[in-house]
Image (tube, rainbow, N blue to C red; front, side):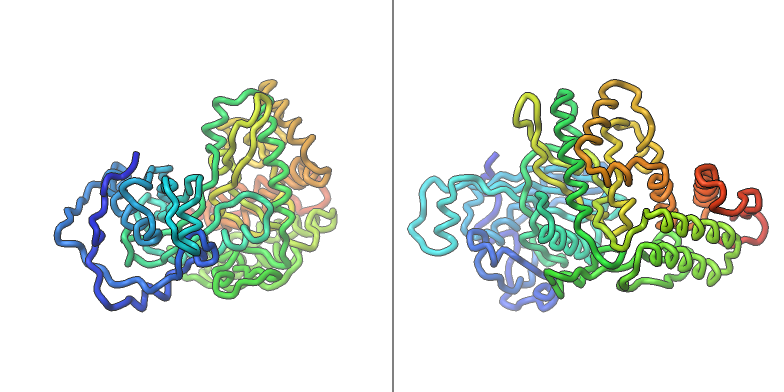
Length: 477
């Protein structure tokens, strides 16, 4: 699979003598700190298409440039980042995968057969006996098209930097990134270390029960390790962590009200760094910010619902489910984002956790969400919190749930499986999306009914709640 002189000696572009100020301001690299990977960085010159190179516009069914043509650009990028690599004999390029949000290209640099008698970083790398493996991740928007929003990619990089520096869990390491299009790919990209292993979603089809139980036990421990990273405020890891890194402080952006979806039909009113709060203060404030927003857009139909939800928050606090800190959660920790390898007839090794884009700081009952996909199977709704306590339909699922309970701490079991914590997670996800649709209001009403059945004296009579529909009368949504 070696590329056979895919790149002419002067590259895919002619390079002018001038440098791009824009590119130097949006290019970052940590490879300078890894002397076996990268010489000192330099400004990226302006580029023009090479007169002698044919350019293709082939796209696949998802609207992406086909790998058959895109790989040439990847080879050029590698040639620029690693100028010591002979792209005709040392390079393997493969397409790892592509989804709605990322296209991932694998890059393997094979070792040279003979060591060059040079010094410093090049000597060390040219004598490396093992292949070096990386991935190039290109962000896409939700429709599978190339994203132009470099801020989204910068946020993802900030998350990996913060998480990687605080967790004893294998996560991709960011080696270099460019937030602009003045590069060989003509796209923003991130160069990351490549973690070994296969997606557990793929690997699971070949595993026996003991091996799958081994994976569930390790994932359980990893969830607790992630949740052990705490902060005094809730919200998303902010891009300020790239500009002002700290070992003791994490910059956090609080949850936006309204959401991006709601903001398409109204103005944004709230987007700022989070301040220290207790989880009780945070949840009540979250409700109040939504209520204030609804009033600002002349929507007055949810006042009674918000009052009930705040009452449930108070009950959760009195019953000891809120605590005083916020905990890190991956929030997309499903088999597709878990890498593993089989290491014995009875066990597997979880080798990495990827796709941290949805991670943020949340109350403890959200962070200690159980991996119920293990006992419910692929058909289970990923956001149906009731699955946590559903009895598995087969022996396989029953034993995997037992494997989780045995591996989890007592605290984890309580926050994962108690009815109070299950309803608390439903409450939290209602707050994340607001109540500006009939479906979301119906979910809130059902939550209140369930809580009233659990603790009849805690909230108002559900029959007193009359919640108008968006589609009736003069209610504005």
